[in-house]
Picture 1 (cartoon, rainbow, N blue to C red):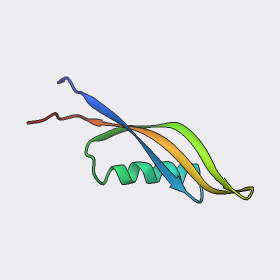
Picture 2 (spheres, rainbow, N blue to C red):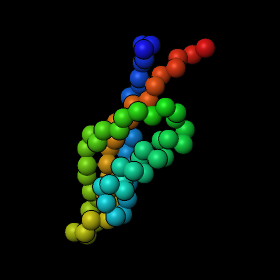
Picture 3 (cartoon, one colour):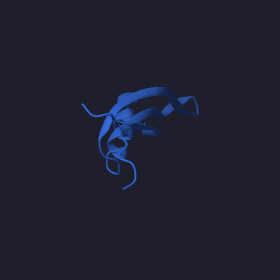
Picture 4 (tube, rainbow, N blue to C red):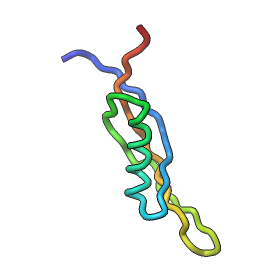
Length: 71
């Protein structure tokens, strides 16, 4: 087994429906420009509230991916 190095970034996804959808949106959007995603960890959950009503769910997600370095 070779040694591996992973980079961790933090992204925020949002959804009008649920935290699960917000987290999924964050990961799936990050996957469009990153390769070798490994782990996604929910760092924080919050909601946007307007006029006493929840208008959006937000998930701050830490995502790790394999770091290949510069050639």
